[in-house]
Image (cartoon, rainbow, N blue to C red):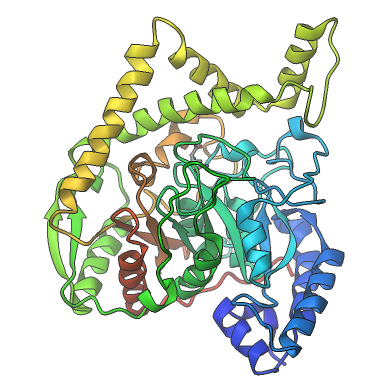
Length: 492
Ligand code: GLN
């Protein structure tokens, strides 16, 4: 039999439906692959083989009884930001210690409702703050892709580096991820995988460790556009337990992937052409425009005037919200406690020891921009910029159905290359933060490899609640790009 771990989610579901293999066999194949690869890639921080085998067995029984759900028997990886009942959840921070939730996040419970199997918890930047997975308390994830034959270790991106690397290295059929400023799309672009951040409010945030609540959204990382649609279908939906969850009907995302682009207009924003962007990315973007035209879409240049203010606004709003959300980690209720001479001393010692340098930097920035005297100059101003950015998109969407842009300003960089320079790291998010500030759905898909053999991604941004157009355009681009490259399995 061919290696089952190479299959896409859609192919694996089809194979199980046709009784070519069982979920138990598929799950075992992934457990073996993870055991072989994880010491080199560090994608999983917890593996749950017993749970996976038990879920796979129950799944095979349901299928035999004619009760298969939409994701029946599919082994997935779960970003360690989603609370999982009885399975350690740390957000890859020391401050959470051995925290083991007694409840399941809404998103993961919906995946299990639909038949999915959990292989384990995936590595990420601490509290999802980072673009390279290097801020994780469990050490960085190594990108399965390499520059040519060099053995320089590259970042898989962040914060969902474990999710992206696991999907790219065939260590799960698909994974959950979250995106506050690009953490689904940038790692997808760096690993040749597909990632969609849906409209803010599509997926419930209940049970997802909070970073910046007005920006955080869950979404999948997958092997194809169709697979990402299948996963989002299960993850999304209204949840009364999250007051920002949208009570909107869920369309058929998979069906949207085969919609024609005839009659659609796609916008190309001039402001995403930035200084110093590699020519290869510029060329790929132009190629993407041609592919969209060939598929029947009209192209229109658009202007998103306030784009250049998006990154500074994001790096005020996100730390501000983070500083407030992370105030709860004081050693009293969760995770690890470091005793001090009195109560305040215990708070201080716990937080100084429990949080890593990047998280401390964000808390300091966030507390500063919210403090009396600076609130108007920074936080309020950033909120105003955020409104302008959202308005730019609303104006553009009067004339276009979707927007095409690059996903990242470079391909994967080396571990250590930017970790000493926070600003260089933040600049990586330049094309992704805008969709978070405006709450819009955006998908990154692999479209080519660069001269070093590394994947490059395109990004499709849609109107609020119009993931269907995003899927339609992305599927058409995926077909035209015909990206089939896979990393050589040097870790197996
Ligand atoms: N890289 C961005 C940051 O560090 C985005 C992270 C994310 O989307 N979670 O804030």
